[in-house]
Image (cartoon, rainbow, N blue to C red; front, side, top):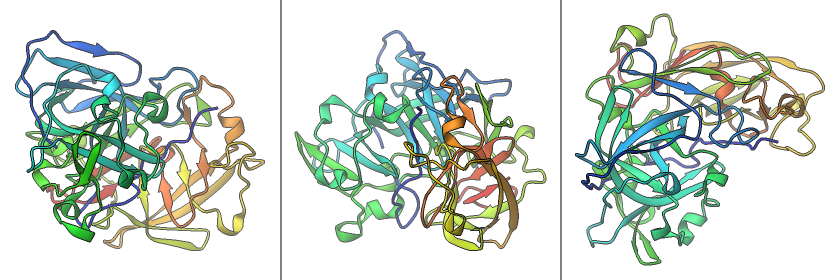
Length: 409
């Protein structure tokens, strides 16, 4: 059976979502990790193809969309590597690459004391732990130079801080992460924001300086935090549009595009999409389902592989083995109402199927109908994106509908 994947950040800072810098030149020949998912992009320099084909092969992942990212040592055009199988995630901000998938040498960010800076980023299902380094990255025709990124699971920082373990178990290997990395293109410019610039109790404890195995929480300036790559693009830097084909039941694959920018080119116009502004601290809005309102506790998240919500009085049964998914005896046709902070509302129809049946074929990577329990929150995961054009606008970036953060569809 295929594993659950929920990538919405577990905790967020006062000024945005949680997420650094280094540099290295070199003249080595380029290399590539080609392990499935994504492609080199379709026509248009601001378009990158995405696909649900998982990097781990049959049965390894369901309802994730993957793409490729080219990583270079800063300033180099030859010391570069294209890494496939990178999960596209609107629920986080920042590029994170597994150390095991990275062969390019990047320079290490250091703190004021000269010790290396390491990050702990909490997700719902675990944490990523690894050094903050700097890279030039390219995604089709878009380039982000001197981008702070996280390298997950580096052997140089194998001892995970106890403070980080308090957030959850490390997902620092391919087997645990299910991808070669995470491309976070969410609502916020950085992965932490103002909270990580403060000392003392107000600091959430995401950034560390490490001397050997001894790691201490440190402050991290906004400029040095792991950042949403989109804001580093010269243009098309105010958000993204995810455009996926529709899915009925379970099928082998779903393909589509991530299009960078909102209203910056003819292929990313908002058109008739409704804009739902979100909480500037957490990126959430309100969903009302089954007469229960999830006030400021709902969100769109392409990195979650199902719709996760509390069935309340409906008492939808969970699966016997996969208790994180629902297994109703027949497919349920349901609806909920979303409301943005701007008062915009809209009804969303969705289905909940039997997860045991839907995931029975390990060759099916795109499944519409996966859902599971999530008390107190409504996570609109990847099935929400099927057959829709979904925009994610970045906080403080101007768009034709005003400054982000907002979502639109």
